Length: 345
Image (tube, rainbow, N blue to C red; front, side, top):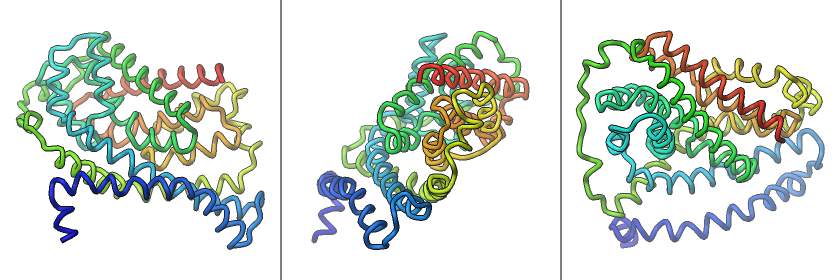
């Protein structure tokens, strides 16, 4: 009887309300429990390498998963209002700077992954969305995603998370605007303009709230199911660095006073591939060990925003000069952000 109730529309709405108190209880007592487990039950000592390494992993891993589960659930609900089809229609007919701003904002809430880059690109081109506006969307969508924001909030707090969101949006808007002004349409593969992409009317359907709740559950299952292993690996690397890497070593080549730290971090980050789940825990420890905020953010943005798989996929619709221009414009924007925040903080 209980199971059948929670399978009803009313049950699907009530179930999250029952889990919220449990979530807050576990999250609130996670740190005291970790302290007790590592330093009392296991008898390890604070400040020693093994104790600090183990404490970091046992505390950070469940904390990140708890935050991801909660935020992704609500983002999954929000995304039911922003389907790719509706996004395409919202950007249709928009020009220059206004279109870049809208595209970057929509990129945050619209489902996107590297595998969907080409269908979205084709749909935007067919709808007459300018090339620069399309790039603002393609930059913002992977770079400013819920996983990155949740991890940054969990490890650094809202200040750094908001800095990342605002700078990511600025890069997406500015880079898209610059690409649009350069008039690079000739470097889009000719077949793109001849392709007709079918559109469906799913975005126009009236969706019951219980179905939106289900979308939240599905988002948690899909996204957390995919990224938990990257979270674990990233936090394992971070835990090792937290416990064993001397702060002086990291500060020697990623510190604020090292003039080449930002461009070097971007050059290293561009060819690497990781998602936010894998790179943010490492960035957290880099900062803890002496890397400057601007350098660490520049490294993170280059890894997430200029991922190698996305470049390879986009090669099917873009010629190499446009891809290199895209990398150069975004890379310069990231370096400017890095230098700026190293100067401010």
